[in-house]
Image (cartoon, rainbow, N blue to C red):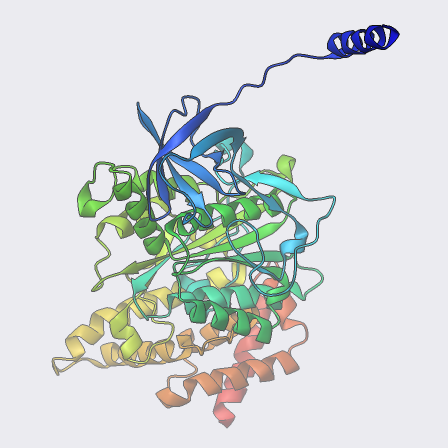
Length: 509
């Protein structure tokens, strides 16, 4: 009897100690799975960009919401999913974990390392950065006025890029678009070695590229010592369209992490044409209405909300910057196609690489007439502005006159001299890949040609002659590089010294 009483007492105590609660879950079921894209019914509270849990450590992201169904892309392997599987909302908008430990690594859009270098170490400064974010407003920004030097003479002199700018690189396949971007990254690493200069962190986002091409880029960056200040976000051609779609946003989120820390960041999107293709594939699979060239109606918003995030923050917010170099591939030089015109209208200018120039041996094949920087001289130091104006004018005159010269018509001596000057200008603007030139050297080379000192030199010898001239002048005129970089630019006193030295140098030769 006592045993029964004790048993009842124990049961009573246990019942009294029980806590009853409820757990609310918003669940649904998979209706259709196709090529990494799923359609789900029942998720009445799903949000755009929300992470969905499919179980077995499989996750997805909401990209489409209709009255009856939710469309999502799978982040990872989707082959284990089937119709009828349960799906849960998580209440979390997709984000990536950013930190300084990402520097020097090759990662996928989910921040997992794919370079064989082991796991990325956690740190106290790790921060979850949302991949979709409203761009800073005009009050939070400041004007773009600090140069981001590419080391490419044709660009730094006539199509300058400023920190916080969005400058499009556009051209046909195999015209050197990636080469321009990689050279710019290498030049940042070169400039970062100057202790007095503000460091630039580079992010290269590869979208839908062959794995062999990405390996080549990594090898070159390692060879020139640029990888330690660079992060490569990679969604190659064999990855799912979901990862290709996420890649530029993930790279931008990482860039914003450093920008908010007051750092200057350069981000290259290579390329947004393949990004648009990935988004079109997702949209058509989700049965969205197709418009021009089968792209969905919001294709403009796809790239505008990405590129608008590039800016220079106000000093109150740390003064960091995010400079974007998106790449677009054209077909048969058609820059008036749908995606090219969309991105041209979003960016602050474009560097147009022309196949005809490329095949003529002009490298980089920059078409000065169709290229423009809407920031312009605001992103140049004074000395460069002083020589670049004459350079652009001389090239414009050459391009106009050379069209008449090819018909073999008789020309006056002035026109002939302008054509000869133009040939020498084009020759010194040619530049081998992976060979960035510092700004003082660029200024001195352009100064020598535009002042007519190379008019008597054989065209093919002009590049070597200008390099020898710059090396000699740096050795003879003390601190000429620092003077050219200063706010004074080419002063009357410096101009006189340059003229005296150049007169003697070119008379001897």
